[in-house]
Length: 422
Ligand code: URA
Image (cartoon, rainbow, N blue to C red):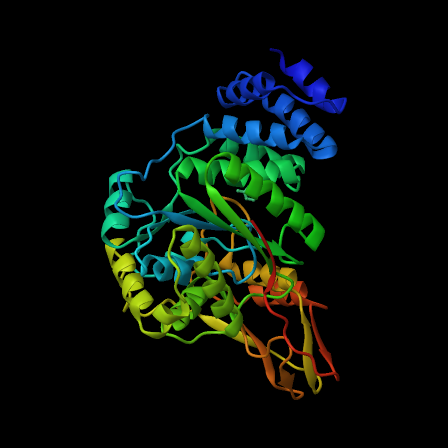
């Protein structure tokens, strides 16, 4: 095979054969196909798309580029969740222990944040002592004994995706449905979970800004999962406004613990319970997952899970050195709170990173005092901004500009659940 032929095929809107796809992914992983050739191919795919069959083959070739995990020796069934990413999306933290509290193993191999969306590992690292890196033996042992593991994904899973994702990032070829779907699903299928629930976000804070695109992405991923033998369901959920009232690393741990204690904001609880129900049904368990939030069983699993990874669930969480309050300029009801703008502001306060190697601030972020549909008087606090570097406040406030609106008309917050595909 020849990379130039393969690029030309896709450039001219023809269908790639299974052998062409397998060859190009393997040769790219080995460094035989050059970065500039793969970037041309990624752009051709971005512009011309792929058939369902091409996407399935592409995904399988990325899985075969590395190692796969095998949970078949566990005595429990496995179920996992993946979110396409959003602002204030801390759901993995309460969800993994909640599902595990019903005897299902949750191998949640996670990543770090880049850009305006946070990363699960960055959040948990706000807990003093907590360790993200586990060996495969530790993962298996913890899944068997406690049931929930949230840890760093090993570098051996889908190495082709690691290279390709970095390339897409610098060639403006990230937002292509075939490439996003195969990227996400190759990692989840290589991880070896029996079943998978996808939380596909829709709105300004998400990859997919409109529901039709999000639906197409969800259908594509569900088809890939099903053809690989991984039972897969997708929920489309709202990411036009931030999820919950706390955004940032330690702040999101704090809100997750509120949910595990039976409280927390209604939208975070609603989504946690909805995703838990889907994961449990796929694993053959029919219960009302709200029960183990109310009775403390999910909290017990959380504490065991944090301790097993050397974290102290009772240690005080880090707080930022400085805070500043954003107040209402008039009386009214909060009618818009743009998730993307709030996410960028939190990132600029230090909760996220601009480059892969940057550190994050554990205490940085935003607390929301008045969310969508809530009434304020002039001078009431709407947000508190948190950071260790006072000079970050200005750029964070610039990011928020125009993102929050007040109106005279009462409005109520819609359900966060938009659709279900599977
Ligand atoms: N997340 C991924 O892992 N891959 C993508 O392509 C997009 C989001």
